[in-house]
Image (cartoon, rainbow, N blue to C red; front, side, top):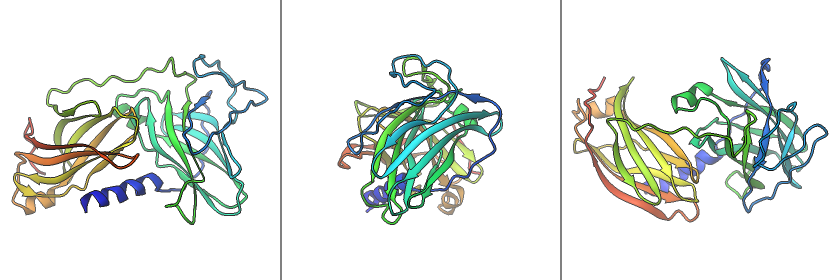
Length: 319
């Protein structure tokens, strides 16, 4: 039953839709160079524009005036990326244009998003009425990236999903992985951040499929939090979760799961409510036991199922 709930949660996370409003454009701008990867669902075309010549991803992009770059063009829809703006307060905004060629409302959404190899969710989606064109801004919080050790959003990879607004659980009308380079770098020049080991970290799993590390635990507001680092070494999206969880021998359920795209890494926080732990008579966490699981999205086959008994290296009393 727990596995089924996690699968439903994962599907909901992939198709969660939130309209994104436009913002006043800051003065500072940077050029955009785009390369595209596609999956079997659609083979988008890359076209030339009057002022920008499309180059291979292996070539270092030259500075150009930002213009729309066509990433997807099918019989049902068109998707393009335009100007990238950077603001010290607002972070980075990527202008996008979505065209609906059908007679029904369509939802455009980014999922499985990563920045410089680290999972990051801009929570962007938009509904485009039948036969209309809508422009929007995808906002990337550069401060949140800095907390993950990323100083600049030089590479953004995402899966574009185009779905019927009336049947978002159905097959996508179009779907493809895409990569853009907002600061003008290329696949050859982007440098991924290197995570530094934490003194208090505990490696739970490190095999050919997955690395899973608890870096530390700490008290945050009304939650006891385990900070985790995950690496997906497979060619499929992995859904990781904790099952059969107990704290100090008392059964609890943080109801936690995380999706990690192929070949990407992620930071995640597993949170336990202070009120739930105190209700069980727990004031200090001495141990956390659980089954660490990981499923792939190809057939939801189980790749990892490891019983874990974690003893926090440092004590963190509940608030």
